[in-house]
Amino acid sequence: MEESAKIYLIAKSVGQPRRLTEEEYKEIQGLESEAYRVNLLQQMK
Image (tube, rainbow, N blue to C red; front, side):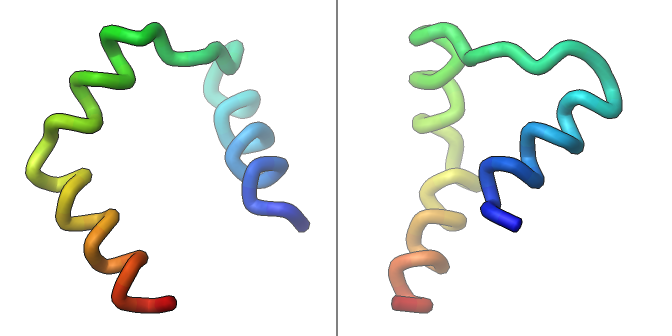
């Protein structure tokens, strides 16, 4: 199953999925944990 489909199904199971606002997106992008996650993904390539 495609990853985005898995995420959608999980989100649907706990409520109505919705898109992040630009503000929410920028807030997540600024998190130290997000930088760490991105770094790990790049190392896996």
